[in-house]
Length: 309
Image (tube, rainbow, N blue to C red):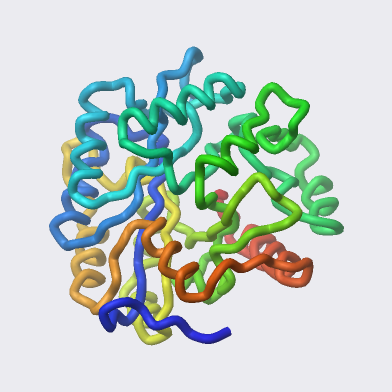
């Protein structure tokens, strides 16, 4: 595949999609202060509405005034606000529709990017539905107590596939252990005809907690990303250990972000980066061969590392 040239003579791309799990006022802001100080603009997801059930994982929603005020501040400062589902537990269609309208009211438009949340029943094309053919059957055999997801199932009360297709541009799927996300998944973003309720899929690199994140963006990996002229979308939860209970930012994380920012990188939110790729290459529709290759890559990563998503 023809190598892309990045805008303004930049050598590589680096961004982050931050799942909002665990995030409450006081446990994640130092991360964004660091990113802002060094000129890195990334994507912070939210839950627009408060749930009616107890949260198993924890985290604030946009109904928390202090949390919402900070999220709006991030948006004003050039960060993208993404969608991580309606709230912190499974939601049926009316609540999902309400949450998308609430998102638009709060931020002026529907979310451009999203990621499925943990075990929420409305997750779209999740669990074994991420895979095809024999790989799907193998996944089922390996997950005998597997969860079920219904966001794409039109007969289900959890169905919202048409809303996803009509409101959201990019949905996250496969993960890689390589910092150069596009090296493993060079066709992203892409449309999958077998999964028509998603406009475009994107992938990301492993880093759900601070230890795995800093491992992926190590000095050697940064240098390789730059040398390859690659593009990285990190998958993470910035409320998962990046900032301690005293409000101190992880020192290793700060060091690596400072080093990364000193390089000639293009540091933009996820949707901005994916829009650029589409503008340069045009729309890409994957075929069965490409789909099989990506699925094998993801399964291999899961087996080797126990990847969390």
